[in-house]
Image (tube, rainbow, N blue to C red; front, top):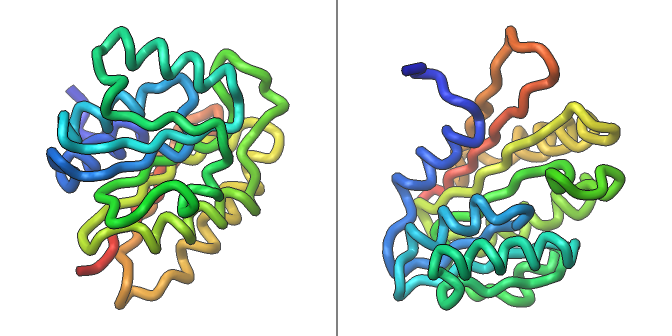
Length: 188
């Protein structure tokens, strides 16, 4: 068993440590629903997950997955951009998860964009409770991905250390542009 796990697995390990039953969480890029289901299980019956995706195809897939898992009552699905999260979610939020790039199995020309991603991160940080965590798994191997990754790293490196602790987790010796993780913990 590897100690150094994939970026997405490490994001899950970190979120599992901070998010508990009865809390609110956000899946900012619902995609195929993996993180939505993960978060819904962590918040339990009394919690709430808000899942955003601009693609109706993604929302339908997530809804099907939630129904299969018996978790639909814990999740609000929004066919909206993640930069609008503060219009729907009232804080405090224990965890917010992003997987940047394109919808696996979907139209690869529809990708997350630096401007809306950074706006969503900024709004998400305002919603986080003290000790809460925002994770970004950043895929850079597609057109536009490297630019978005640079924008995320630039923005996050400028967050003040008095307010946030920021981690950058990245494999240096792997081919084919492995995703990297940025995790932001709000100081309490």
